[in-house]
Length: 112
Length: 112
Image (cartoon, rainbow over all chains, first blue to last red):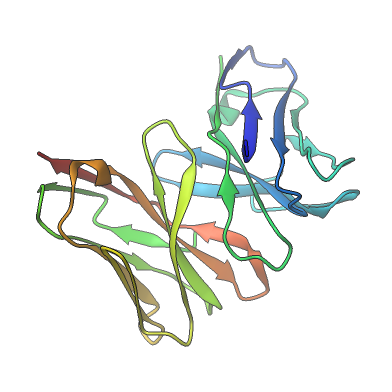
């Protein structure tokens, strides 16, 4: 099993550019989420989804959009990148009703 | 808002020694989890303790939970160089068990 796959691993953007971070899981998990990890801040929840067509905001949603058209995929879109979005982004999934999260290996994003 | 604070921020020990790290949180929880993150990788679930439990063991790991003090500790016994990683506690907000809130982490270095 591949588990949770995130692409790309690394990305450099200029301020104002847009991009989509991809996340796919092959475990048939209904719940998927995006976190960002910044030094000294731990992980903070950006957006999450409990199933196809259902998304909701987490703690730090501003500047990010998500959609969930399939169970497998949960892309994170940055519409106009800002230097404050420089971070490492993690996608995680779980069964609804499950408690533990399965994480991808992250995307390291730098916005200049 | 950040739920957990971990202490110490960094810990350096020799192989064979025990490592103890602590986590404090702010609100009522249903359960508390510990995750490990190796450098450049995603988080991996280690152990979960429910709010009605006081202690739990898994291999070389021992977790305690004191809900009256809103704190938990993770003990790794007989540490190995392979235990070098960052360790995070994560709690569920009382209203949504899958919206995990992570602590700031403890960086553990185990020297041979």
